[in-house]
Image (cartoon, rainbow, N blue to C red; front, side, top):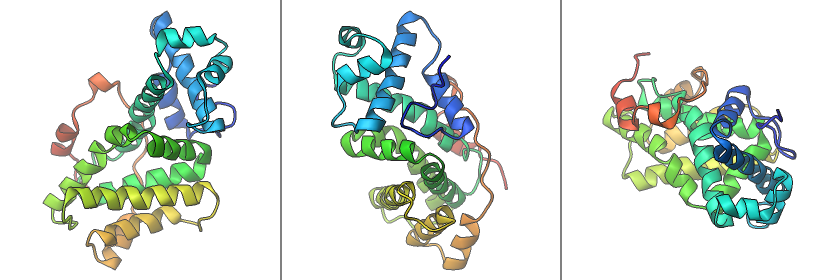
Length: 246
């Protein structure tokens, strides 16, 4: 079987994220397997050509199928793009979010999320740039991701660990700093330990003192794990109600 976590032109994902992506695009009946192959091909083409320039014909060629077969499964490039976004959100993004789901400190959870995405850009720059391209061209990606950082922000505000004037500006701080940091790292322009620096700045921007922010940002990261299927996962609210103590 081909390495579905490592399309041509994109560097390999970290093992756990690779397993999550592979699980999300494999198995099922013939129709599901074909759609998984098309998602993998689309990721390869989007990563190599950019979302705007990519075509259904190129996706079909990479998948070894005809354009007619692609259209039998996805009515348009936009529909295929939406499926790619859902798969990425439910595999890569969910694995990152789930790694911090049992951490009790809301501020630490915010820091973990920031660091994971910056480290993804360091370890797999092509994948990070693909996510950034998808976020820029298809706002629905953020809609799939936002519930996780929003839950962390709400928890941190409730615990009085961070000062969040309103949720919109809090999300803008998280997403704005993180996306620019991911791009800088993916392009090889960032200094060492940039993930910790980014998390520290985010915590300080949300009202935490400099010394405490630096301490929280340096805490060891929890291990990544392949996320459970979507229908087997508790809701964000349920995870937030049952964190573990440090």
